[in-house]
Image (cartoon, rainbow, N blue to C red):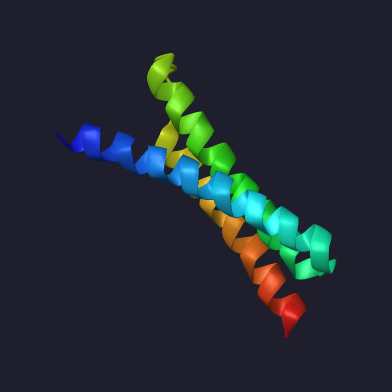
Length: 88
């Protein structure tokens, strides 16, 4: 049961990150605010993380998902921090 919930959450992450990426790119193209570009990078990294997770499950790769996930989270947090600092 927990595997199903994890897969469902990964699918939600995939869809939401793609949706937010599209919205942030459209907003960046419209307003040309650099912060939106940094948030687009964060959403792109979330999308990349979800795709890697799904590919790992479907193709039964033996990736260390926990370490990869933590690494991606650190990179995403740095990108979001940079966008907040740039705004302030």
